[in-house]
Length: 326
Image 1 (tube, rainbow, N blue to C red):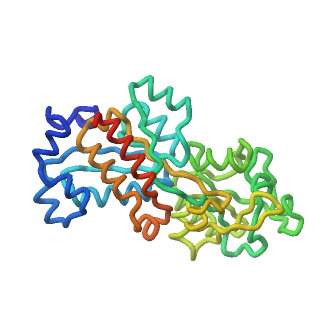
Image 2: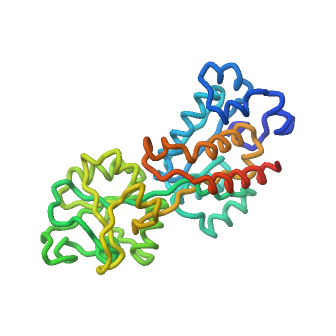
Image 3: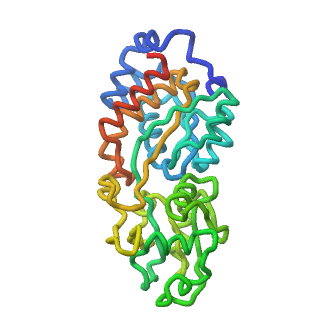
C-alpha cells in the first residue's frame, strides 16, 4: 500500500493553507481550464486515488477520473468495477480503497465492517439509472414484461422454459445472463422485483459487456444491466418494456423516464468516499471535481445516466465540506 492509500495527508499543511499556496488549483477545478492551464496551475497536487465498486457506476467514475487527470496530471486515479458489495467487502471497508461506487445504498452489515476498520463512509447520491432488461434481437415473442413475469424467470423458483411463464412463448430453455452476486444491481433487482430472492441458474459476471455478448449470441437469452450499457449497444440487443403489474402501461427504459420516475426500474446511483480518505488533498479535490461536474450534460449525452440536480449537488457538497472539517 502506498503512503497515499494508507491515509497520510499531502504535506503537513491544512487544506485551506494548501489551496492558498497552490493558487489556481481551486479555479481550475471550477472553471475547467485547458491542459496548458492544468500544467501551469495543478502541478503541486499529486498522489493516488483508488475507486472500486459498482460496474453500473463505473462509466461515470471512469470518465470523471479521465477528465480529472487531464487537469491534474500528477494524480493517478484508478477505477475498477468490482461490484457494489464486492467493493465494500474486499476493498473499501478494509481501508484499501478511497471511494466505492454503489448502485444501491450501503447495507448495515457493510457499515459495521467499515466501522471495525475505522472507515467512515459518506453517502452521496450522484445519478439515476433505468435498469434495463434485454433479450436477443432474434426474440420476436416478447416486447413487455411485468414484475411477476420477471420474478418467474429470475426468482428462486425460476421457470425452466419461456412457455412455463407464458404458454404462447416458445417451449425453449431460458438462458439467463446477469450481474454477479456481489453486484448492487443484483441486490436491487432481487429486492425490488423478485421479492428478495434470485435464481442461481444463470451466468453471473461483473463485466456487463459479457452479458451483452451472451444475449447477442442466444436467441433464448435474457439479461439485465444499467442503462448506459444498453445505450451503447442498442444495435446488439433488444430492450424489454416493463410494467409493475398486469393492469399497468408498459414503460420503456430511458433517461427521461428515469428522471421523471415513470419507469418501474428507475433507481439511484451512489458514490461513497471515506471521511478518512477525504483528509488527503488528492481525494478531496477528486470528489470535489466529481460533485461539481455531476450535473453536467455529458453524463446523459456521453455516459447514459440521469445527472444530479442542483439540490443533490448542494447536499453532497455540504457533506464533503463537513467531512473535511470545512
